[in-house]
Image (cartoon, rainbow, N blue to C red; front, side, top):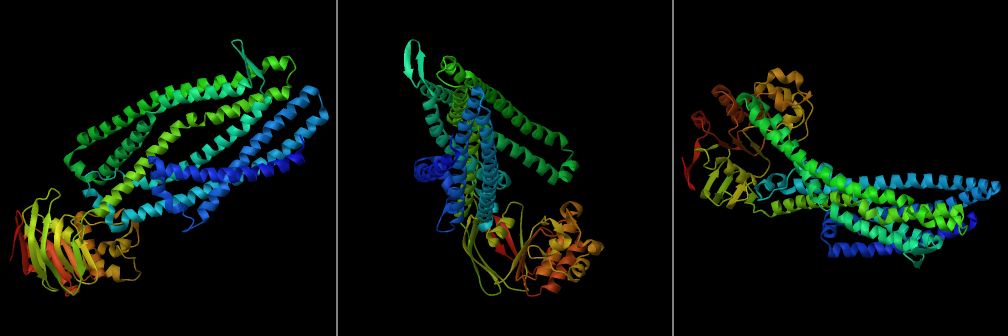
Length: 590
């Protein structure tokens, strides 16, 4: 083996193979995107990432990864030739040739280590950048146009969006790269080791029939038959893997929900009911897991039988030629090594079937998530404009998703300093009307004009973000340093919390609902919006605290458009105007 000549040969091989493989990859990729469902799904998710016009770096980095993948194939071929040389030296008892082989191995091993580490870094770097890009793309689309909220109105909303963004994005980037490079590695290696095995194969006598180069034909037939049965056995794993992710996510969501509503469950002593539901969900997980186990036993058992049989098969085939001294020990070992490589490469699709099944499930879940976002974006939205200082409704009608009329052609005007109270029995559509004014309710028509500037909506259960009390007070704006926040806490009668203003804690679990509502009023006072919409924002306060909070609003925000939803008669004195919803779309101004 002439190592100097081999360097030139390998360099030429790399350049030619890289050019051919790159062209073939582009053509195949185009065909998959054009003619297959999962190819179209892939391009829909990441087509922009690979756009050379927008950013050539990902495409160039992927080409470099392809080059190092082919470099790895060439290294495998060189190691195969080295095995032949080394074992031949042992058979000939040629010490000089043996040490030449050892020095050759040192060079090959050094190059192999550098190549493997470089390839690992390139793969990880590419995957991380791809994951970062896809996460930002999906997260932005989920947050834009409030799809995270509006998607709940769909007939089939996306399940567990947290899992889609956290887990499936990671799996998609990593598996896309590993499977695509695995396919290329397997195909190119198949060609190279077929050539090697063709040169080492002799005449195969099968049932009295002599087959020239018979070993090559046998390994192909062997793997094709094995792959066919593997696909038949492994096909149900696609659906089972999809169910596994879905069932686990549902169980995890139920556990989080129990923690969120733990106090209510404890008051009702609902542990039995919740436990039954949780156990039922977990039983579904275990049942599906057992189905995966049984199917995997069949699948992996079949693979083990195929791979173990292949381990001794080439020795049996070549034994007669070796003992008749037609081939050397090196040829014998290289035959076994080439046969194993070829069998492994041809078996790639069979062995990786489970990975392909999981990948298809990831594609289905991510495209389902994107579908839900797009459908949420297509839901109708109320016509909202911002103009002037007053709020006005012009022929506004609000419906339920089933098209039952909640409010029919309402027209009114709410001026600054003249608060409006929306009243009506439960289910009449009071909160839904506020959602329509906020632009969150898709089932309405008519014209809504809001004051120019900022508007704030206070719900019955305020949202407290993770972080400090200061963060919660200034949400959704950035928290500001200074004493204003502490002074506001005192004004909303939460002065006992001023020393903990910058303490990070789960304040949604620490504060009572009444304290959370007062904190929300502090947020309102700090924001000084042009319009404020309060939905049962004082329901957990006593009448004295309620009066104090509305007095603060009049004091701090005398020119703010104020609309409240509530049942208490004590709210009447704070609202000179009232809109009463009478049901079936009827309404009246008082």
